[in-house]
Length: 354
Image (cartoon, rainbow, N blue to C red; front, side, top):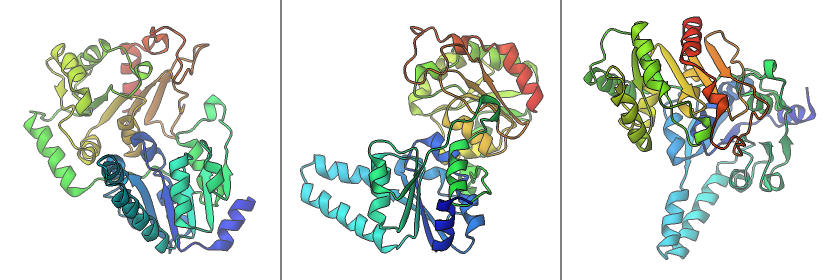
């Protein structure tokens, strides 16, 4: 056991705080901290501090004792409207209430300045961050900097697993719960869309960076191939994805377009009711993996997790000399790493995971 794990063990924490404020996919990928910490300290009260947009991902989890939502939007609104003294008072009240919870251990899997500050405001006697950036290390007692494993060993959430292991919590498995009300609402929307007895395959083509996208014209082609294989293809996405989803659906009439129609927790519920998910490096794809759904992940510009420890997940990734380029592609918008993934290859992978 490491020195940090020994220190955490000696502390015997009664109140633990996870600070992962965003983004959606990373909240899902770090959700394995919940069962890991609960297994290590079953009597401890476990809280999670998160930004409002990602809160629905955690709101229905019965293994989480408390969900705290950072009211950053409220503070910004007060500040921008000129009510700066009121903003300062609201922040000071929040910080006082956070400290009053008397957390013993804070895990900061985000490793940014704002997450480090949140942990620091808690006053916890042991605060540990992952891959600190932006001066985060100034606000914690220890940092975990795991080496990136070789490709074949790069399991999903390897960095968050390393953070859990550093404090002696080993039982890491992604933990995404479905709420009853979102489940009923998702089922209603799927029924209203005319989805019948065919097994549903969720398509998740959208993410924030164009270099992570698969070729748009191939999604309708994939939908047609999935229909011919007996599936009902359904496209999911957020409100900002509606235009692109409509373009795709206009090219394949059997593709049901639900982009922008479901809230975040309803999206989780809809994925849970499907039989297969195919998506790019985006939060919805991670949700499929977390829910135990057979999943095909199409990766290119990002350094992918090459396996999930289960044959129900396949990662399709072309390791070109320029890959992974992350946020600095050198291909001039060609995105050859994604173009080399064919519809036939995706269909073969789908047959293997189902």
